[in-house]
Each structure stands twice: as structure tokens, then as C-alpha cells.
Length: 487
Ligand code: GDG
Image 1: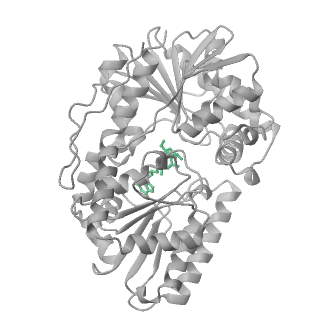
Image 2: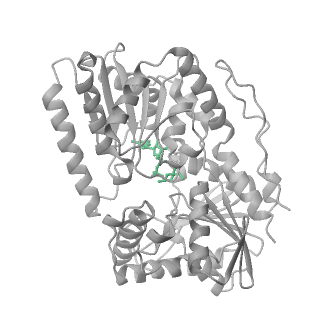
Image 3: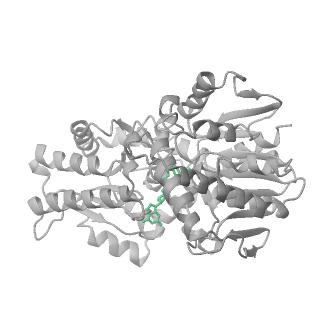
């Protein structure tokens, strides 16, 4: 039987910062086996101080046992099967493999980001179907498997991450790999009727069934896979968290990812020169501030968010010069058309709002379309009255958790959170909104800006205790404990 680590009980109160001591040691669940993490991009450990929850949780886990982090080296002009970049960082070795320009286009741009990303975010309107893209996807997964295999030891535990690598376990098994292999999906898993919009749905789900443990962010995701199996796989038996498929028995579970809240709170309290400068530039301390921080992606609901802010100012003209909205949105995946389109739409909306309202001493919407350092973002979050987190669909959304961790418990801001973020399953004390309902989002913005201190404290205390206890470390320990318990 697998025993899940239990988070410690903590006192809940406005002045109590929950204590992480007492969390399960990773060794409680992972035995002495080496951990091999595989993700699309290999982690850049030299930049670990700037990294978020995913890297933190996984790094702790690999460092504890020793192991490998394996993935694409990030260059677009490599040669298939070319030399791997192997780097030792104490007990962790990173292995980066090259991919060719054709593979970059077919595997990464066209299939992973052009088909799977929109499909899994319920955006059938943005899905592009092409047979060459699927071939490229399978080809790169095969290349991952062939280059990983010689590096594996018999007792290794393998943890594969995300939608880029769904078929990897099946290919490894075909090549003779007998190690335990787990898979975690960071993004949503769609309902069966949406998934079946791709001709490859059966191949994708068969690929999932080659794992020993499948981890998802939410109950909704777990139930969507179960519904698919019930509708499309008559030979597969699902009972509780177990799935039997022929000779294979695997487990499906919900493992909501967390952050290192203690570290983020520390960052939020530091006043580095850049952080101070950023705060003075985004307005006088008397202004109330709304903040959004997202990769520039159509799944994040940014146009609706801008419109809600506009609506707030139309409904409450007295807020002129009293509030501003800072949206940080570093662009990603510029090579995919839909990303260029969302960028143009946001520039147009921001221009229209500022063109109508901005004055010499007030810029209502500051849309910052480039990355900022983490030690600038965290203090900005702390000094913002509203964390505005309204994706149209999101696997989890770590920004919601970071915003809560960054707050001063004695005078916290208010989190406004989309009902379609995975985080909403856990963070019901936020103001939960429908990200398509612009009018209601404007009303909730007003409610957040005028919320009494007592209510803010009560909501924040409940959110904070959850975010601290269900940390990145806890997430990794829970998954690996479950995977290791599989026979
Ligand atoms: C995927 C799933 C799931 C953002 N701008 C900057 C910056 N960030 C950081 C945030 C946060 C991270 O990036 C974004 O995390 P999210 O969870 O919001 O979203 P995705 O990148 O889409 O991640 C998501 C996640 O995987 C983990 O499983 O939660 O649902 O889509 O940490 O703070 N960081 C810096 N500069 C920026 O400008 N340094």
C-alpha cells in the first residue's frame, strides 16, 4: 500500500506564518533509487535562483537522491543524434540533447504548441491538424528515448513531464526499459469529446497507459481521462484510482503542484534597488494597484482582463488616478501565429485604454511586454492590492499561489481567480470569477479594492496556510512516494 505524506497541522491566524517544518522528507517515499527527470527543456541550473515551483520541487527531489535531468538543450539548429551536453552539478547531472530545425518546427511548434496546447486548453478553434507534425512529434520522442536509454540504471525511477513527451514511456518500454515510469501533466486534460477532435487521440491515450503512475493537477482532469477511457476503451477497467489495461495496471491521481512559498515571501520582502525603482515607476504609493503576471498566451484571458479594468474605470470614474493596473506579460512562442495575434490585440486594447484616460501624472494600464526578474516581480506583488489571475483555462496557475505568498499577512491584498484555473479547486477563499464575464470581473475588482481589512485577512490566512503546506516539495514527495509504491 502506498502511504501519501500528510501535511502537518498548523495554527491559522493572521500573524502566523505557517511553518514548513514537519513536511515529509523526500526519502520517506523515494527509497535510495536515482531519480531521472525528463522534460521538454532541460533545466538551466545556473539560473535556479530565478526559477519557479516546478524547478524547485524537482531539483530538491533529484538533489536528495542524485540523478539526471534530461531534455532538449534549447537550440533550434542542432543535428539529430548530435552530441549531448552533459553537465555535473553535484549530485545532479543535466543532459541536453540537440534537435534539428525540422524537428523544432514539427515536434515543438506544430504539434506540441500548435495542436496539443490549444486542444488541451479547450481551444478547438486554434487547433491545426497535420500528419507531418504528428510524425515529427513521434520522431523526437523516439530520439529522446534512444539517447536516454544508455544513461539509465536498472533501479532508476523515471519521471516524465508534460504534453511534449506523452509517448515516451511506450517507446522506452518497446526498447526494453523496465524501470518505474511516472508522468505528470502540467496543463489541463480535456473532456473526451474535445480530445477526439485530434485524429491521434487513441495513440495519445494508449501512450498514457504505458506509464505506472499518471499525475494530473485537478479532479476535473482525472475525471476527463476516466471519461475518455469509459467512452473509447472498452478493454480498459477503471476502479477508483487504478486502471487495468491488459497485463498492465497503473494508477491515476491528482497531485496539484505548489510553490516554495517561504522563499517567494522572502523575495517579496526584499527591497532590491530594481524592485524599489519598479515600484516608484508604477505610481505613487497612494495609488491602489492591480497586478497580473503571465506568459503572453491566449489561454491566460488577457484581453478580457484588460476589458474588465476598462469597465471598472467606466463604472467608477472616481477611481481615476486612484488605481492602476500593471500587467507583466513576457512573450513566448512567437513562431506560432496565434501568439502574434494575441500580442497585437493586447497592444490595441492597452493603447485604447491609455489613449482615452492617461494623463501627465497617471498611466492607468502599464502593459509590460517583456520578462522582469523574479526579485522585482515578488515585491511588486506584495505592494499590489489585487492579484488579477483570470486564465480562460489553466492547468494550475502558480502566479495565484505566488501572489498569496507575497502578501503581508497583516494587510494582505485580494486574489481574484478564474474558476477555470486548476488553482480554483484549492483556493476557494479567493474571489472566484468567470473569466469570460467582463462585467462581473469589473464588479469583483471593485469589491476587492474596497474589501474591509478583516475580510481580507480571513481570506488570506486560509489561502496562505494551504499554499505553504501544499508546497512544491510536498507535490514532488507525494508523486514520488506514490510512484515508488507501485510494484
Ligand atoms: C504551466 C501550466 C502550471 C511570469 N512572468 C515572468 C515570470 N513568470 C513566472 C511566474 C510563474 C511562472 O512564470 C508561470 O507559471 P504558471 O503556472 O502561471 O503558468 P505556465 O508557464 O503556463 O505553466 C500551468 C505550471 O505549468 C506548473 O505546473 O501551473 O497551469 O500552464 O512562476 O511568476 N518569471 C520571471 N519573469 C517574468 O516576467 N522571472
